Image 1: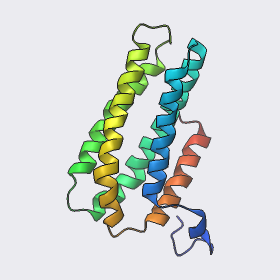
Image 2 (image 1 turned 120 degrees about the vertical axis):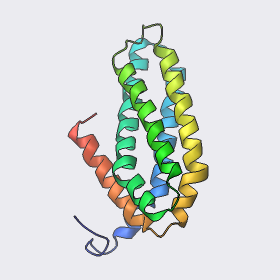
Image 3 (image 1 turned 180 degrees about the vertical axis):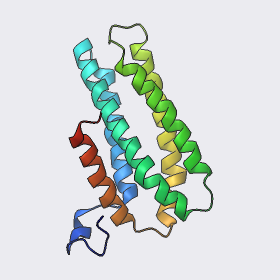
Amino acid sequence: MATAKTLPGGWRKKHQKATTVLRAEHALVENLFRRFEMAHTPTGKKQIVAEICTELSAHARVEEDIFYPEVKAALRDHRLIHEAEVEHQSLKELIAQLKNLSPDDQFYNLKVKVLGDCLKHHVKEEHFEMLPEADQANLDMVYLGARMTAYKAALLDSGAF
């Protein structure tokens, strides 16, 4: 695995801090939820929900496999990480349910709303508690951001979601 010392020169200019990457991904998914609210056809809704599910699933894997372990190792208080992991489990359960529902199902729109509400709560805690603490930790956040970006791209390319 490449490390910050083995990457080609100038790589830092091409990458963002891990916390910046996460904030951008949160904004992307929030925009997808806004698009869902404006969608009027079952086909349009289903397509947007598929994008939401893919983005959230990949995002959660990146956080769980790379970001959370690094932050957990750097911080003394693991409460925020443990809480985020529990919230991820709830999000995953809703995503699994949505993947098995048709937009015509009576609970489809409600499940999307609940997923969005859960995500808003999760994002709020990350933005105002975890990410500021992570930024203060003794971590190379640009290198961590580069790893996370590459991992997410590989996950999406694999079609795992």
